[in-house]
Image (cartoon, rainbow, N blue to C red):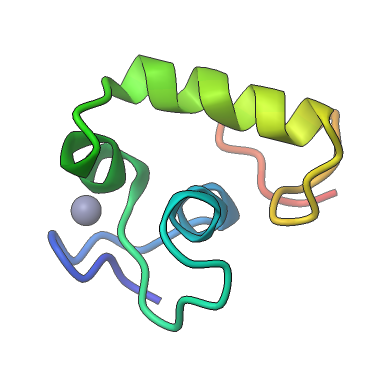
Length: 75
Ligand SMILES: [Zn+2]
């Protein structure tokens, strides 16, 4: 899947963040920078939020130790 705004190839983090903020069942998603910009957030703040969602066990994101900072996407 690609970002509908900029065309970047999406990771589970991009998709998870978009679904969490916009629509859990979204078929089309945007990348983290585009989604963050849409909500007036910095990318840093977005990753902070993702860490928090991940910590609370949100199923939209991979379980720790996968890390949104280093791009690891696999469990
Ligand atoms: Zn994008």
